[in-house]
Image 1 (cartoon, rainbow, N blue to C red):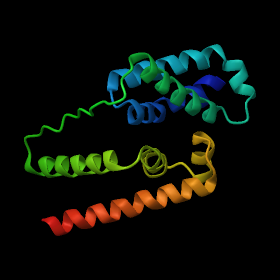
Image 2: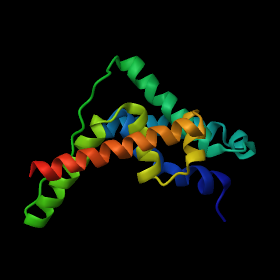
Image 3: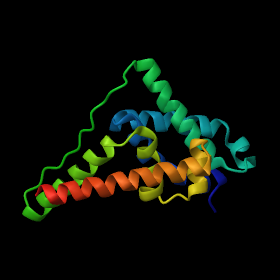
Image 4: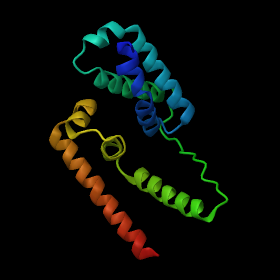
Length: 162
């Protein structure tokens, strides 16, 4: 039988890593930030078990730890470095599509990018996103609508540009 920590906290590691990577844009830093959050969570495991929304606490802690990284390192810009190399033509076409999606995501304002990631990639509900980011439901809806509209416009430009 799994402990509360294994079932409810540790099981979030992949989702939290993707969120950390979205914010810090560096794989090693994302791992470090995530490790720090899990260490804090382990020390507070009894408190987390009593919380109504331990996942929300984890996301807020992750965001705070990411911000702390930027304060300490005084780095406010970073470059995403993905390995898109491939030998097959189909994989090459796929990597071009992936590059295009990442270019699009990077063009979004930070709040829209976060909300788009949480909704479209992580599959969170509007309510969960609002709770995690500590914003109203209306702000979630407006930012997601704007991100989707921007994506639609971007894809139309790409289609017409070819």
